[in-house]
Image: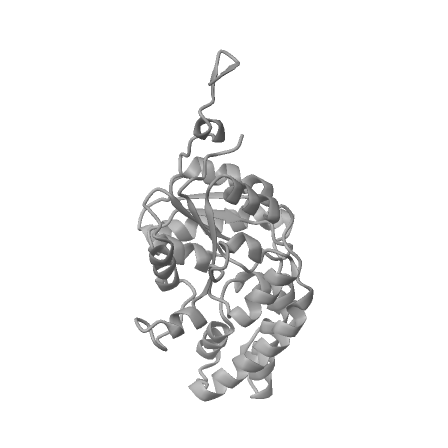
Length: 291
């Protein structure tokens, strides 16, 4: 069943939501973080090479600067802001090169088209740099879903977008759970209460959206989330929503799906949208179509 998405704004995370990037990016980022601390003589204070793979999933959705800060706390060694910035830039350059081959997640193109063709508006809201995000969208022919005519694409980053906005300046949120980029998107799209939803794969992304007062559809379709781990990952997303809300999350706050093909239906249900036929003046009466 299709839904009437007229007036609906869908705010899409990028990594592991639109494109299957975390399985490419996270091994690079995790390796870079631990390699730095090994080079400084902290081998005994950090997980062994065999134990590190778990962080490729646990830290998904975090910026690499946050990963460095986590390990700094473990080992009791603080990196200067200048050195951390240089380390992050070096990792970003290698990840951007690796992400030239990133693929769209199966079913995403169809979900984007259903929202657009049903009268809704799609936008990208991400904590990642646009240097990392845009090539994947371009290479997978997704940019068309985030534009209207000759207008600039609705692709907003908590890095560059907030940095360029005079209300934020260089005060970029250190936490990818910070809601500022969602506040920006709400204003930019003129989203109406009850007609906006975020699509997120990570706990930090869910936290940011919920903190901005936006209901969330969680998705566990990315390949770095193994099928046997999807239930636990989904519960983690729900738990994060509950933590931010300060109460148990309900199905009006968050729904979680395993496949992108389920997204349009989940959006329709969480926002309680009318079926698409109602927009066309069509109703079902005893199994018969009436105009």
